[in-house]
Length: 123
Image (cartoon, rainbow, N blue to C red; front, side, top):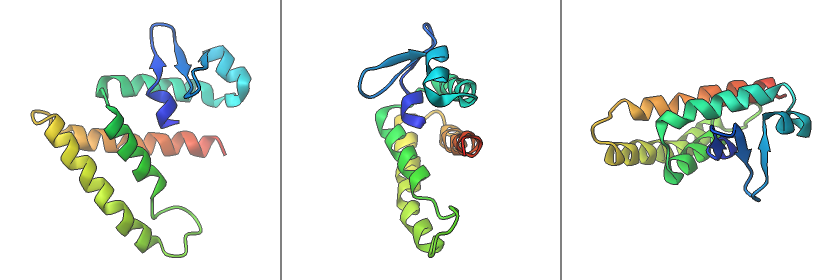
């Protein structure tokens, strides 16, 4: 969801998939996103002011994937340890990229909560 939301075009209200396919809101709804469509488009619109680059998106994606609080993990503490350097890398990168915006790291990190909410509604 995060990656496609970074390819949102607000002027046309469309999302472009990695293969180049571009769909508007109605087409995405009909393509199987159903009731999640509006949530995904809202999330994409909320990402715009953050102006995330590919590095931030990649690190945030990795942090979402490597998460110790997922259900049925046998060793969540080890997973959390794997996540720590990713969090630190994202924090350092954001602070170097935006030295005058110290609030951006927590602001971007909070998007994980929004992603989880969308994901939970999709299951």
